[in-house]
Length: 285
Image (cartoon, rainbow, N blue to C red):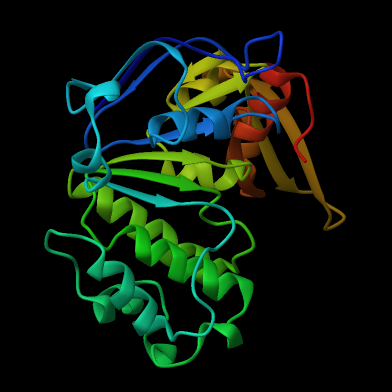
């Protein structure tokens, strides 16, 4: 669906590239997470792919057609939801979606259905001025799905949402991918990226420092051990680690298994946040 080769970009008036030799692709039905510290070039890449920025070099194709040759027809096939909601506060939620639906020349989804999917059905006729930031974000996301896009660009789709609202958003994104859309997500939420993404790319200073499925990256940066938490004789919990290699022959591990005191057993693969820290050399902000 999206193929990028040797993408480079330099803002006018500057002396260094913001993006350098980017190479990645996103297939239909897949969710791609674009991760990295602030200022790494994530938003610039998104602006290029949505047709907002030009002047870049390299090869970018969407639907197997060069991005440079795509115009209005291309914009009719994409859905965009940026981090900061951009909706009309004097209109109701239903009026907002009705207005944006009217801008599309092709068929659109039922606004009431979308509001139900993002948990806003009960406030459909309420003015957006009364909405919380999280409610506005969900409305903004619903707008991105109006035209049944084949490519979705989502910027921090779960930022600032409570767990229940974040779950609604994740379900909507998963369904879009299941229906065949290619989904491009930029986020600092490593938990959401782990749960949502089929593949992630870590962008550092305009370069891709790591690329792959989240689970594979976490295993590659983890330790080959298992952590066993068991109940001590005094009633407290104690955690011991055992090498994964040769675990079956460990006398101590066998004693714990037969003791019946084990509460949990976990492998010690890294989290995606751990991978972020290693790959970027910076802490999450």
